[in-house]
Image 1 (tube, rainbow, N blue to C red):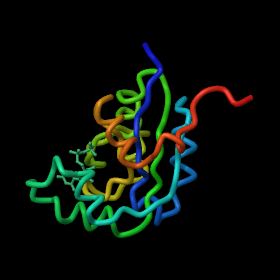
Image 2: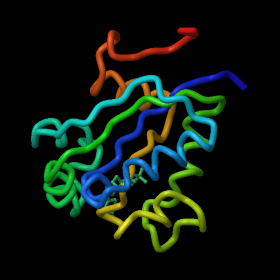
Image 3: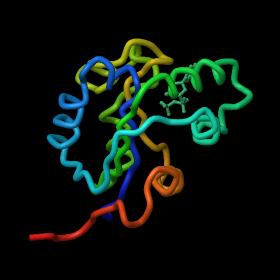
Image 4: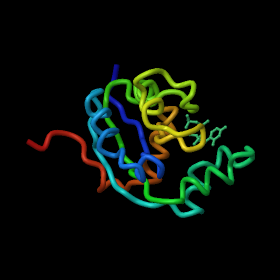
Length: 144
Ligand code: UDP
C-alpha cells in the first residue's frame, strides 16, 4: 500500500478541554507522521465552505456555530493507507456508537461536538489539506 495523506482537525470542544496532547499522542502512537500542523480559528465563511456538502442538512447551522466557537488544531498526517486507518482511529461520527479505544469514544461529547475530523477519501484529503495549508507549510521527507 502506498504511503499517503489524510487531513484532520481537532475540533473546538477537544481543544477547549485540553485534549490536544492526548490526541496527538494517540495519533503518533498509531504510526501517523505529522507533516503540517497549526492552531487556527475558522471564520463562518470558512466553516460553511469546508462543510458545504452538508449545507442542506438540519444540523448545518449548529455545525457552523460549533466549528467557529473557538480554536481548532488542523494537521496533515502521513501513513500507509492514511485515510482509512485514520477513520478507524477516530471512530464513528456518533461517540455513542464509536468502538472502544477510538478517539471519539475517549474524547467526544456528542454527535455534533465530536472532538475530531478525518477526511473520508484521498480526494477530500487533498482538497481539505489545500484549504488549510499552503505548500510551504507542508513538510515531508527526510530532514536528518
Ligand atoms: N454532524 C452533526 N449531526 C449529525 C451528523 C453530523 O452535528 O447528525 C456533524 C459532526 O460534527 C460531524 C460533521 O457534522 O463530524 C460532519 O458529518 P459527517 O457525516 O461527514 O461525519 P464525519 O465524517 O465527521 O464522521
